[in-house]
Each structure stands twice: as structure tokens, then as C-alpha cells.
Image: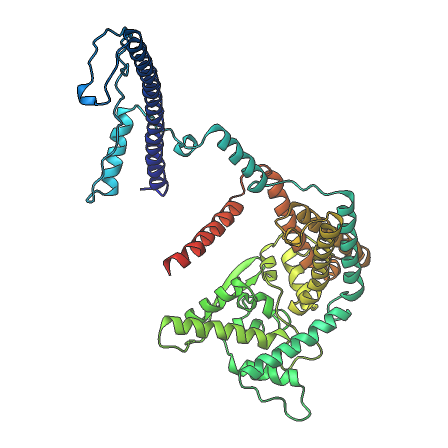
Length: 501
């Protein structure tokens, strides 16, 4: 039985109940008419009675009949009173109402059988959408209007000020990107995120028992060394010799070639897989390569415990590599930006003097410091543009359009705000792309090093949302309907709770 069938059965039962209600209303109308006829007949009878009494009094006066005070000796006078006789009767008997009889032992299926029999007796046709027949024409119009206004995708109605504000916010974010991000390891924001990463690694190490560095040693290197020893994994191959020279790999790129070193769902999946199967998975030249490793056994007495152990090994090992290795000179090689490792599967194109593919270019870009730390630095101007656009939108809605604060919540579901965010991040990407193109001099690696990948990803997601909204404009927004229904259910439950208590 499909999920819609119970709802359809309930709607059909409601249609029959509506028919019964309408029939009862018509019957009440007939009863009202009959009562009015009876009341009119009663009034007419009273008039006839009053006429008879008047005629009787007149005859007594004309006959000069005198009655004694004693009623028992009263004279009886017979006379003829000519009054038109009229018999009041109802022209047609009232029809009996049809009904569905239910007893205490009845169930839903039995009631549905009687509903079907009632519908057959009265020739009630169940259409494909019985809910539509439950509403009147005015109710359907009101419902369609409300759906159109509240539960349908709407196009953005931005004015010139919205576009000006969005463009300005994006331009400011682009200037922040150009002036403070720069190349990996050179910009002020990159230095800031590098320092924050070092502190995060030290904090995580202290949570796991690190007592601090020895006197005169580097605290970050000490914390990294501690985490490397505590969270050992079987897929931490450092160069091509560790994998029998199946492909080229060095200490500067083994974090991007090993899929388990990716700080995302892909990395988590391959890390758990590698730890359970004693294998290691790498990407080289667009190919997925699996390598057998020494037997690796996870701690834990059951599957859940082993999965948790594998997850903690993956997380702890990522922290040990996030700020580079313990023996790295200067900045060291960190871990890739989430999902950046998947770019190695795009093994197409010919770039530069050596006609290298895009996958090779992506690896070389990572080797030059385009890692998670630099990704965090690139996210700052993107976040700045996002917040600035939302704040200015709230200010405009509150003080320019004079809306209540409840209507000024900067939700991306708002069509105007969504369009403004698209324009702001588009402006940021335009400034970033122009700067990267001018400074790279046509070199693909240098162009990618200066490009803000986070900004382009954010712009791409907003562009897809805008295209989806444009395509669905005027159609039903199922998410909005579900949100409204969930809220109504919660409200009904909350209203019933005091009664139940």
C-alpha cells in the first residue's frame, strides 16, 4: 500500500461526511419550511376562532339573552355560525435522512465499506484529487493565492541600491583578498592562520596528554612529534620508495596523493577503509592506486569501537600533519583543502611549457603551500564579504523599508538577499581573477596560487542556487511547505500538552 492511499481514503470519507452534512442542512431547511407553514396555519386558526367568538357575542346581543350569574343555570342558545372550514396539512411528507450506522465494535475498514456503499447509493464520484472537492470555490482561490505568496519560489526584486551595496561589499572583499592573502605563506592573513593552526595543534596535543615542549625546543614541532607517535596509521607513506616506486611521490606531495589525508568525507572513508583492510589508496595521473601495507589492527572489542578508534586515528593524524611534519624546515607541507585532492582525477589539458595536465598542476600548486592553512586565509575575505552583505541588507530592510526586526532575518532563502550574495561574491571573484591573471603572466601554476579557490566555490554554489530558483520560479517550494507543516504540528502538540497534563 502506498503512502498516499490512507490519505485518499480519509479524504473520501470526508467527502461522504460532507455530503451527509449538506443533506442534513437541506433537511433542516425543509423542517424550517414546514414549521413556518404550521405557524401560518395556527395564526389563521386563531383568526377564525376570534371571528367565531365575535359572531357568538353578536347573536347573543341580538337575541337579548340574559344569563344568570350561576353558570349551571345558564341558558344554552343554539345558532348557526357560518365560518369557512379549512384543513391545514403538509403537502408532502419529509424524506428520511440516509446515514451510516456505527457501533462500538466497528473498525476503520468496516466504516470505509459503509462509506463506499453510501457513495454508491447517492452516486458520489471520487475524483483523482478528492481534497479539491472538499473546498469551495472561494476556499480554493484563497488557498492558491496563499500558496503563490508564501510557498512558491519567487524571483528577486532588487532595486539599484541592492546592486550597489552588493557590488561594494564584493569589491571590499576582493581588496582584502589581494592585499592580505597574497601567495601561500606570504600574506598577513596566511601568517595569521598559520599561527592559529600551530596553536590548534598544540591544544589538541595537550588534550591527548602532551605535557609541553622541552626547554629550548619548538612547541609546535614537539606537539606534532607527540601526535605522530600517538596516532600512527598504515597509510602514511612519505615517498615513492615506500610504495615500490609504483608512482612518483615525495614528502611535499604525499599528503595530497594519499586520499586518507584529505580532511573531508572522502578522506574519512578511505582512512577507515585503509585501516580495516591494511591498504593505502593514492591518486596519480588520474588513477586510483591501492597498495597493500603491513597488517594494521584497530583497537576495540566490537565493530563500533573499532570504527571510533579508526576515526580518532584519522583525526589525530590530520592534526599531526596540519602544521607540517615535526622535522620540516620553515613552513612545511600541510594537508590539502577539503576535496582539493579530487582535482587529481581531472587528468586533462596541456598547460605550460611541459604540457602538463590539470591534475599535475594541482599537485604542484599544493607543493608550493596551497594547503588547508592557506585555505583558511582565503576563507576570511569570503566570510567578510558574506557577513558585510548580510549586515547591510538587514540595515536596509530595517531602516529604509521600515520592516520589523522579525522580517529582517538575513536568511539566504530570501530572493533579494540571495541575488545580492551572488553579486557580491561574483565581484570578489572578478577582482581575484583579474589580479591573478595580471600577476601570473600566463603561468598556470602561478595563476592558481593567486586564485581564491574558496571564493570561486562559494560563487559557484550561489550561482547554482540562483539558476535553480530562476528555473523553479512560481513553482511550489516543498521545503517551505514542510517547514510550515512542522511548525503547525509543533504548535498543535504544544497546545494539547497542558490539556493532557
